[in-house]
Length: 571
Image (tube, rainbow, N blue to C red; front, side, top):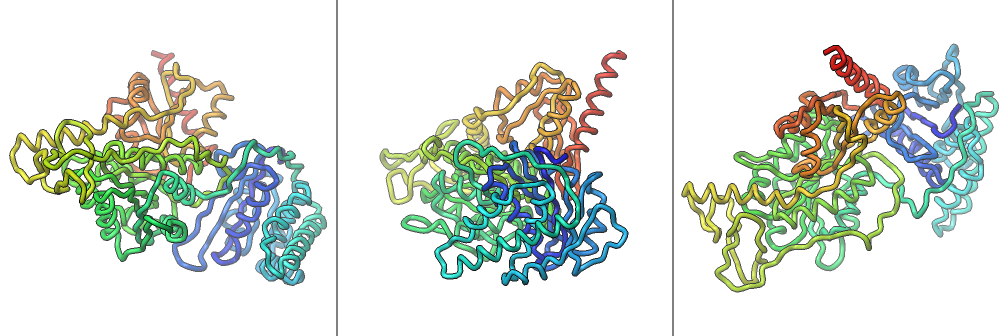
């Protein structure tokens, strides 16, 4: 039955190898030519607590982590109890027989993960034992996994051969255990490698790579889940002449530092999560008022306050559009896939330079920690925009006019005060009403240079549309495809350019009788933003800390559309 898709969940305690096992399966499948996507969720403590990861392996591009499980790998009793109900009919549970006994459990078999690993001479090979067993259940060719082991552990070290042999032995032991169980799920379809080179990468790393491709040369940050991997990546990789990466002691220092760097001509960036973003509000207001290009990444998590530090949510949108007091409307880009994370980072820097001000790149925990294989970006095809630098004489009116003007670099002609108080065109403080009107209109008018973003549309002639945002794109698109197979009349729209929306997209949305918006928050934040812009939008919300399941969206969206259409017919 497996065919084109295999969905496996690994569940247990943090530190038991749950994440390692999921990523090992993903890496092996990617190398063999499959498409993969992982999802991880874990508690906020450093070690321990209920943790689970899910890996989906497919012969076509993966849109979501999947709903029903083909295989559950349970590392302890709690994991089995909490997740067994999500195993599909005919699915299989593999459990650690050293940790639990399942005497009456159907469709399950146990094996001692660690004991089998130790028998190979490699105490760390338990994940390979598990991978071998899973591969046997779906008849994945053994050579796929052996090739993966050889490539992964050939590192030019003296003990490479020993490590490779022990891991291959671990794979074989797992296969033998699965064979003895008598279970079989059906063959997984043979992989056909995607064209071109593939990268297996997480969302946070894709944001980091995209930022470097865009020319970031100044990064300052403070550790906070789930944005910390971006800081760590920059500390390791943003090195060399004219590059700077540094960890400071608070988010207030972060925003202050990158404002100074942006003013000095650098492409500056930081990354944080909701609580840290709240601390940056005053600094973001300064960036808007003084017109300083910076990029702030907000990797959303459950809130408010400490909330759910390691769970996913899409509840910071309103805070990102209007973070500071007063009239502020910050540009927001929200990628929906790991691949889009790379290009969204490039575009965030382009936007910051183009309109000269702060740009918010909104990610979210499930996207940041998601592993997926993506086509290797072609750096030569990227459009990277750089600073419009003033090159005239002194006496320059930095804030003159009603749109973007070239920026002087400190120490060069045209020096000015980057003033956080209201100012005149030169930058001098003023409280005159006419100047406040003039400068407010200038700041808002600058957003017009950002309204040419791209967007997706399907079946645009339909009066009801589905429009997700951010990381809900994948499950929503998979649900949309199922609804199309059910002959449900529905349009599809999507863009990562949330604020300002592409002009043409906004015009299309305003013409719809209803736009349904799946989003992971209580308030229906994106739907409310759309309504404020003249769109008849209604949210489909979820706030569990977990992503949407495709089947739930199919039911909720399909039911809504059918009820509306029935009412139309009745009238």
